[in-house]
Each structure stands twice: as structure tokens, then as C-alpha cells.
Length: 272
Image 1 (cartoon, rainbow, N blue to C red):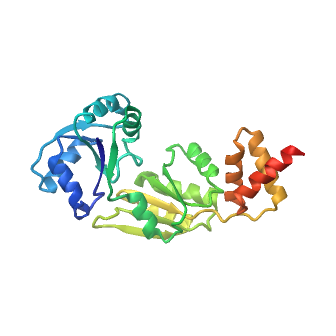
Image 2: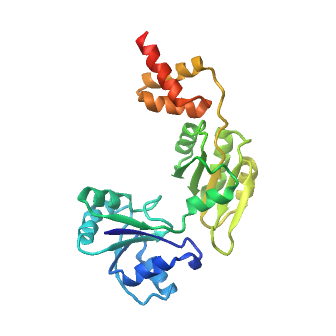
Image 3: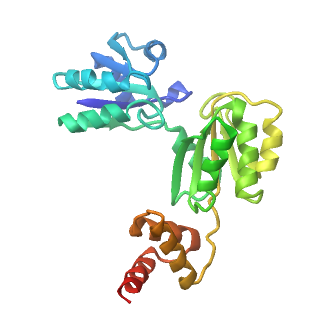
């Protein structure tokens, strides 16, 4: 089988007993950075030296079939900082394993996404993980514009060098009244969480920030709209090529109205 092994994102004390047991018996480990995997094995005092296979964005397409073939005869552990396949290599491998009928399981453990959400102070009942924003300012603003009406808590990864500009763009697109939490170096010695508005945090980040960054952003407050206005919005999305069900869900998220009611309303209007 394929075993997705969540490994520490900073603090080695977060390595579970089950993770250590699996690594002690592993014969093959696929990882984005095999040097880091070797370091992890040494740091956890694991004497086992499995075969290490590099699995990254540039080779996953052609390596996936090879690794899945290995997994038909033996367990293959897929390891990375945090949970593999979450904004890291592994998705293509899992998809190939599913297509080939090879079992996939996971060892739960550290996750920067979930940890940042939990300590951010933002609503945790509904959230969306958006990964890294585009590097180019124009592309980044367009992506943020597409998320402007998103009512769920949003989670982003960001590099220290782009943090200040990304926060400034969030303020420009979302408005400066949104609550934001910047989580830095989670589980590590210099772990830090800064909370405030986009402009406040952008000013702080301009002074220079180091480490791995997770940004948690409060969702938009749903705009109360009449059923008639919402129906017009749904129709406009459908005419633009969006499926009716998806259009209703999008408008419901932005207005606070019921997606089911909007769907029934749209169907009724078609029969007139």
C-alpha cells in the first residue's frame, strides 16, 4: 500500500509513536527532499535506512507509476514536512494509486494548515485552503478578487519575501476591516502569531519577516439580499457558463440565503 506519513513541521516531539514504528520498518520512502528525510531518520534515532526516492513537482508525473508499481508488492511510505499531498507532492501519486487499485492510507499528524486555523481566533466551522497566492502582483490581485465574497475562513501559505505585498493586496481587495492572523514558524522555537488588519500587518511585515508563514483571513460578511436580486445573480452566473447548482451555492455563500431555496426558485422561473 501507499502510506502518507505526516511528519513534524518543526518540533521533533510531534513525531507519533506510530510514525516512528512505520519508519523503522519502511523499505521504501518517497519524499520531496530525500536529504531532509535522511536527517529526520537520524534525528529520531531510527537506525533503519530505507531506499529513498525523490518525489517532487518536476518528476511526480513519471515517478508516480513507478512508485505505485512498487506498492503492489511492498508498503511505500510517502513523507514530507506535515501531511504529504497538501500543497506538496503526493496528489498525483495518490490519484495513480487509486486508478491502479492500490490501497492508500495515512498516518495523521502535524499540519500547518489545521494548526494555524485552530490558533488564529477565526471561525473554524467552515474554511477553505488556498495554498500559495500567485507571485505576480496582477495575478495575485485577480485571485484575491475572485475570493472577495468568500464567507468561509481562508488559509494561505506565503513566502516571507512576498508577505508584505500580499497583505497590502488583501487590504486593497478585501478592505481593511477583515481580521487577519499571520502565523510564523509553527511548532518551532520562535513560533509567533500576529493578529490585526491587513494594513497593520503589512507595516509590520515590511520590516522583514523570516520563517515559514501561514496567513488566516476572516471570511466576508454575507450581504443580505432579496430573493429577487439573488435570483438575478444566479441567472447571470448560469448565463456565464456556471452550473445552476454551483451558481446557487456561490450566491448563497455571498448573500446568506439558502442555496436550496435559490435552486428551487431558479427551476420555478424556468417553467414560467
